[in-house]
Image (cartoon, rainbow, N blue to C red; front, side, top):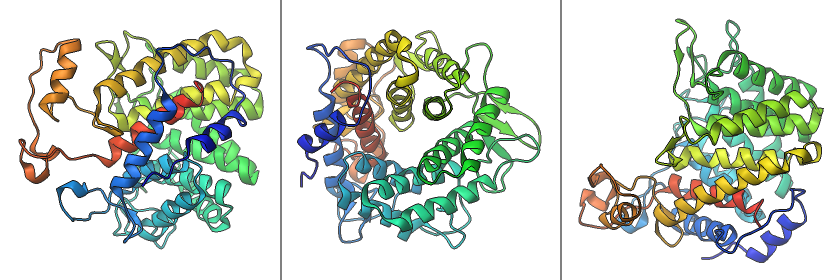
Length: 402
């Protein structure tokens, strides 16, 4: 059932943003419609009303039900909060609490509600909780978010710094540190707890002091505490969440150094010769890329008042986001509103469309896991995470292109 109202959402965006004036070209992607299609497809397919929960199984493959990981549930729920539908926002947020919150106030990776807990997952849950508080006024959701943040702050590693990826674990990740910083500064804006602002600043300092690659200015994945070994992998969502945090720090503190860091990261992320590009397009999966869009858009909209001189660079970011989102829309969309991240392992039609445009030295190899019952000649499965991530991509871009 279609629940997302384009007219209401357009009115909300038009009256809440202070972004620079954007010149929209005739061939630009209609991101508002793309968002509506994707978020409605996500809800209609994967929300189970009987269980009041997300179902990771595609109902086209049968009547099975499986709870997703809390990460997937949080990403899907954030896509719903982007619609500003108060009823749906409350439902998905309460479902997270009912199905994943353990007795210590953490959100477990699964519905086992055990100690299998990851701080980055919990930070993304906090984003949903705070959206619910803002849009529905549910005090309990704010209280739950405050407890999660208190838990996360306790996972700061006392020896090298940074936020541990898993509770009491041996790995400090850039993503857990960046997402915790963003959760903290978003909560600070609601409860004015100065310790949260300071925590966010400390997280940012750690990322740039310990995990920034001086050669390309991107961020490494993390550090194993016991050995000091640095994992030099790089992912878009770490950069995106760091830029989002910096954007709020620019707005709140007016400190120009945060703007310098944000612009440096953004320029590194759109370097076509850099780690994030293959054949001219971002090479991370949708589940990572949507937060890079969010970072860019936060830089443009949240920190704009202090940084009008950056408007030319902002236009460059918008142009690149539009190009990347158009690629997603044209080549990763499997049917109206539905998306999948890998053109090589899904359907031969998807592969053929891609290769007819770009060519490829890599052959098509259908993955049985992508099809109902493992039959590669049968019905392809739809994917909750990819769909929710695509919805967020189009939502973020629509904030600066409507």
